[in-house]
Image (cartoon, rainbow, N blue to C red; front, side, top):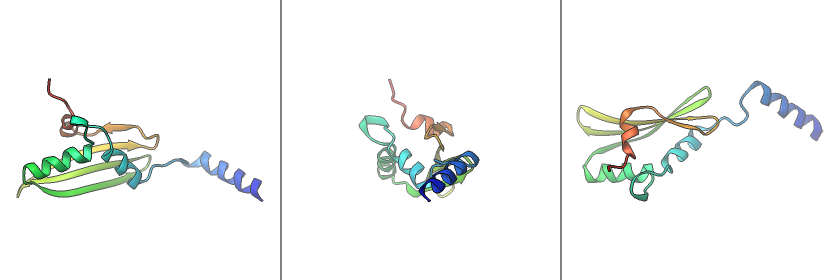
Length: 109
């Protein structure tokens, strides 16, 4: 019986990604990324929100086929919203999805 289950599991892996990342795992991965001054992405964004009296809209996840987009949105006034967005693929590779996100952890010379 155990052999049948292993064969079936192996067969499933051929037709769908076996290690598809979950939205929760992708979000946790982004939040823990190293950023400025030995802080994580989450800590840098939290500090920015507190120091500039901004309104935190929160973290959002958008699950797609083969990847998860992770976004943090911040309201800076009634009509302007900042969005930081990353894409986490099933192989755990991460790409930055907008200029604002790219500048977030950039260190000034």
